[in-house]
Image (cartoon, rainbow, N blue to C red; front, side):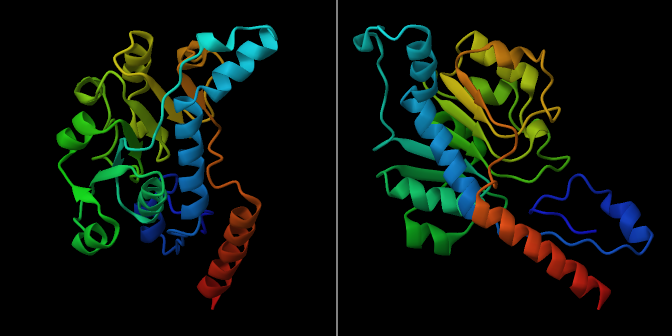
Length: 238
């Protein structure tokens, strides 16, 4: 059984192992594409690009001076999960002169020194970052890693980005937080459930961007993912 990406939470690994079925994934193969997607959504929300675009379509004569956006340069990016994708996100953030704080199960002093990263515990990351980007696998420990308690730790101006798996964020708590403006905005490339239900209340909010799990959907990334899946199949058979 070969997955097209790094995550294998959709596969019952224990049952496959018991049955003698091999499993192969592709850790880090789509890291650049996913990190770029996360950065794009972060910029889109900060600059209100989607909101202004839709407002202009409704009213071509809208007053442009009614819109106020923000900057990402000089701000703090908090990364939860410094795997391949998290690292690519950190490298890109440095190009915007952002300070990067991170939490990961394993501290990585060599990367801290090379890229100027700061390690901190989850409460510190959540409470100090202007942007929080999630890049952890879905496990029993990370399910609802972000819920009401964690969202209330964040700045009221914070923007949450989830590129991991939908259940990493408690969607009901996120809806309440966004509708009551505990935080500024959120961007999701993954949802719970997935695909998102057409009547999900998150879709009614104007301070959230949702994409249908397309972070790795660049032409080059998808092509390589298909090729590696095929190579993994051949390797398994051999």
